[in-house]
Amino acid sequence: MPHGEEVLPDEDRISGKHIAEYVEKLKGENEALYRARFSQYLAKGLDPVDLPKHFEEVRDRIKNYYMGWFKKLNIEVPQETEEE
Image (cartoon, rainbow, N blue to C red):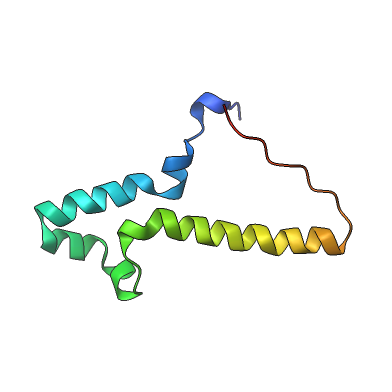
């Protein structure tokens, strides 16, 4: 399947920032709908506004787990590059 950088979602979208923004808007406009739409998050104690932060935490845990294995197996890991 053809793909390119222009069709991939940006980092904010991947991390759920757009959802957190929607949550903030919905909370202010319709509390009942907010609670209904995000009931599963709320039931598990996760504030949907914190989704980007939670994404970062989970991503870092996964990354650290595999980095540990790479080090144990003496596998060289390429350095991340900053996007311009």
